[in-house]
Amino acid sequence: MRITRGLATGTGSLPHLDADEALDLVFKYVPDAPFWPQLPKRDFREGMVVQFSENLPCLKIKGNSLVFEPKEKEKELEVFYEKIISDDLEYFKINADFSAGLPGFYARLNAADLRQIDFIKVQVTGPFTFLASVKDENGRLLLYDPVFKQAAIKALAMKLRWQINLFRKFNKPIIAFIDEPYLGTLGSAYTPVSREDVLGVLSEFAENIKESDVLLGVHCCGNTDWSVFTDLPCIGLINFDAFNFQEKFVLYSQGLKGFLERGGVICWGIVPTQEFSAKENAQFLTSRIRQGIDNLLKKGIAEKLLLERLMISPACGLGTFDPQKAEQILKLLSETSAFVRQNL
Image 1 (cartoon, rainbow, N blue to C red):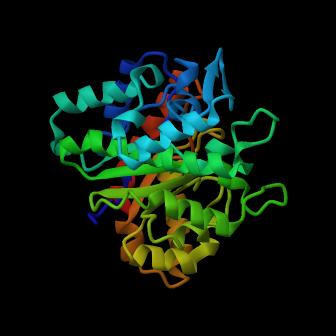
Image 2 (image 1 turned 90 degrees about the vertical axis):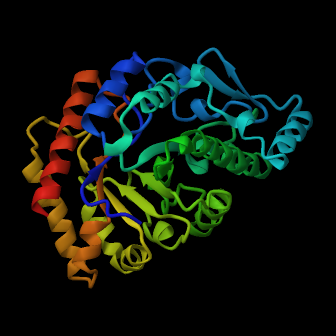
């Protein structure tokens, strides 16, 4: 695992209607670990759930809604599992109608001088967030449907593998985020998901993503039981909202110690998103990271590991903001990355 000290990347979504404008910002502000931008304001199909719904059984787009239609459930499941068994990655591709930023990103990389790039970052919506966002024909979350739950786990993993396969031609290590904002509710009495369920599902999800050049990460922008991720050998990166939840995150120091020692990376989501005021600066945000590192040092984690396995990002996606605010946040991210590298 190469040293990632201070490397910056994005969490996925941007608010632009034009993919080229979004890509201009990506390559300007996070050139070392660029990502393909999700553009939910451009098209309903670029929302974080609909974007990965193509060719999943029984899911249909009706107007601006994703609906579950089980009329031909058995037939659709049969076709679906034939594609899974034959390992047909192309069946699970993300078409341009569902992501203008992805083919644009590929084209930019194809024409770019790749020497500056340390990682290429891709992403997929995680199975819990996906299943908790769609209801069946009876108004019940698909999270409760064991048959569809298995199908979604397999399909989303295939969509991530398709991306990895697509970008492998550039011969760069790949960071692959599983975006799981829903797990910010883990542990709540109102959340029908247990710790054991998360461990089992994410382990199954990662079974087919074992490539040595892929750093598999989880992004969760809420507070959660972070030991779920540190206890999963398949997870190599944890991206958390370090602006709001740093004090709670460092409470999991014992698990984080083992995670870092086996090569894990902590991606500090230190640049605020919802709370962004344009008054923050790189020195202030770096001091916040330093505070978190010092707290972990007191718990027996080696400073060398904390510094070498450190990335930064915005706290969450930027798709709901206006383009000017999104650019301000990415600019601050870039400035903070430079400050971290020079001063930590």
